[in-house]
Length: 145
Image (cartoon, rainbow, N blue to C red):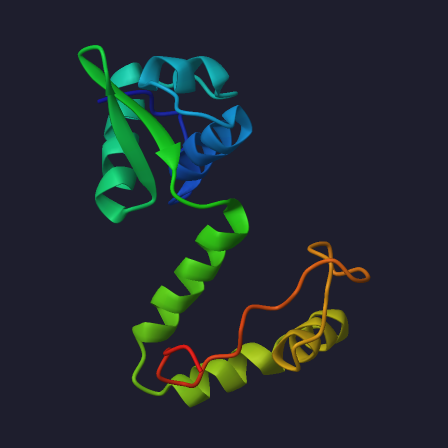
């Protein structure tokens, strides 16, 4: 039953590889084009399945191209990470405990960055000087203030 010496990939590694190929492309890619861009060798059917699952999750959009589709990510890597963080936070009823635990595990640099963002400071995307304005403050219910 398959190659006994082959190790199973960690969860999410295939999706991450496919998304990295899409981000690097800067435009829509077909499953065959994703296959050519990947550093790992995967069957086109596997890539098509991964892209279909990403589409169902809302992580990519697709447009008809020939008999198939071409896919584009719905957001950049930081946006996707933020969405995943929100999704995980929404799974727990005690949001306060989750946020407190998250903040308590930040290193000093990340804590300063988060504090600056919450205070409305300008932070460059790399954590450096000016260049990245924090999003508009929103009340806890998520509505614009």
